Every structure is written in C-alpha cells, then in structure tokens.
Amino acid sequence: MTARILTCQVTVVEDMTPDVFRVRLEGRAEAMAHAPGQYLELKLDDDTWVPFSIANAHTGDGTLELHIQHWPERENSARLRKLMQVAHHLTVHLPGGDCVLDPESRRPLLLLAAGTGFSQMKAIVEASLHEWPERPIDLWWAARERRDLYLENLPREWAGGYDNVHFHLVTEREPELPVDGVRVIPHRGRIDQALAATLDDVSGHDVYLSGSPGMVYACVDVLASLGLSPSRVFSDVFAYAPRSPLVPVVGSLKQGSVQ
Image 1 (tube, rainbow, N blue to C red):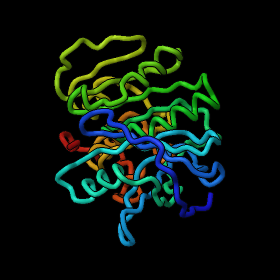
Image 2: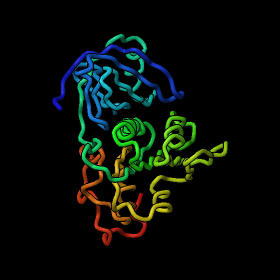
Image 3: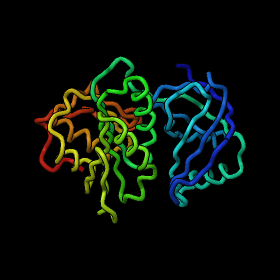
Image 4: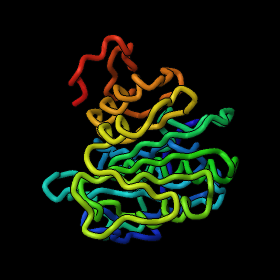
C-alpha cells in the first residue's frame, strides 16, 4: 500500500482520561485505507512529524481514530495538544509500519499492549473479529493503575460477546474495585511477570506487541522460553529499536535477565 500525504478534517477531540484523548479524522475513503496495525505520522511543522497508531480497522468510511497520550512536560506533546484545540484540518502521512495483521494466518492471536499501545491492538482485534470472528484472541493490556486503562469497557465487551476472546487486565497497583466479568482475567505486577506466571506454550500463536522497547523485549524474552516462533512475532519496536537476536535462544537466557 503506497504511503501518501493528505489533509484530513478533525471531527472529534475528546478526553478519555486526564492524560489520554481521542481524535477522529475524516478524509477521502480511498486515501485513508490502511492495514490493521499500521500507523500514521501527523505534521506539527515542516520538520516535525509525530507517529501514532491508527486505532481502527479500515472500514471504507474515510474515518481514522487516534489515541494520544498527553505529556505536559514534553514540548511536542504540549504543541500537539494545543494544535488539536484549534485545528480544523491536519496534514498526515500514511500508512506506515509492517506490524500488521497477517491476512493469511488463522493461528490464535496473542496481543500484548501497554498504555496507548492498546490503540494498535484495537485495530487488529476489530479486523480479526470482522474477518474471522471465531479466531481465538487473548488480549493483554498493561498499565500502572486501572484508571490508565482508558477504554476498558471495550475489551470487556469483546470478551463478553465472543467465546473465543479473553481480556487480561494487568496493573502494577492493586485495583480499588474488584475486577470481574466474563472472560476478564486480572493480573497484578509487570506484564512480563504475569505472562511467565500464566502461559505454558505460545508456539502455535501469532504474537503482536505494542509498548516501549523495554516492555516489548521483556515480554519477548519470557515468550522465547515458551516456544515463541521468531517468524510469528510482530512489533514496530523491531524496526526502530532492533536487537540481535530478536528472539533469543532459550539456552542463552540467564536467570534474572528479564528487565
């Protein structure tokens, strides 16, 4: 799919939490086409383009959704938030990224996200449920506190509506309220620790990860000991923060190496 630069209309800017806001853009349907899991780059000025995962699967209606973390202390974040408050149109470059849902695979999906990394997984889940509604999906979403899971009701709805979807909610702090729900499983601690304590074998899965390089590689190291196939693991981190080997040989992992 050829990348292009276009101008989109800003139709929605809304806060989902004090730290995360949602933006919806509209443009020509054919120009907004993208694969589930891809991202766009938003123009701040002639020299600054900021990447964001596209948070919805392509449906042909010409709309895009972004979930944006606001960091007041970071210059680009503050500029972006101010721009969103006044802009009626934005210039974007899309699509980008190779961490996309494989249209040929029917393997169970293991989706791992931290923070607004959920936006990329949201697009992948939407596309998968549309194309192959019976495909097994295990979605893990990690945050420091439960309030940071800014769209928690949506994966709860997926888990409640599909027997093949499980939502794993991971928080570092104990939730103030009990976590319940159909096929909703709570975990406390870091996501890599929760994976190690919960999973037995991922050799038959397609694995997608979205988060910081530290989070992604910590999870990869855990999954390597559980049969992770290097050809069936996908993340944008592999492009902008590569390491070698991508998936370590199990025997090379030393106790305590996961950070």
